[in-house]
Image (cartoon, rainbow, N blue to C red; front, side):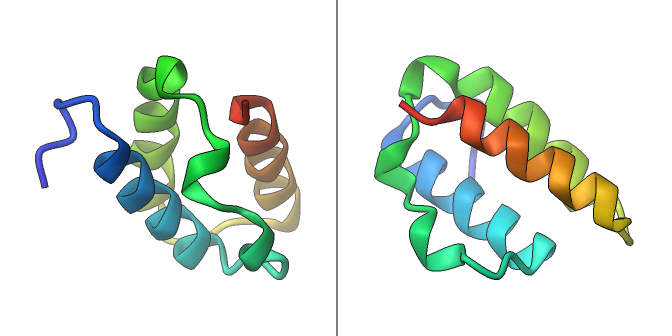
Length: 73
């Protein structure tokens, strides 16, 4: 997957990967079409952080979920 290309498919991929890594309880409520393609670079940055980190504290998960909320349309 080439994440340098801004696309809805890449947004969907990153959102699904983030949800899986964070093991979000309400993951069903986080849908790729809720995210603004204009904030693509911010989403890529978040994806990189989430994918490259092995473990998350509760506070880190909360902060990342808050960030996801801010990236929604």
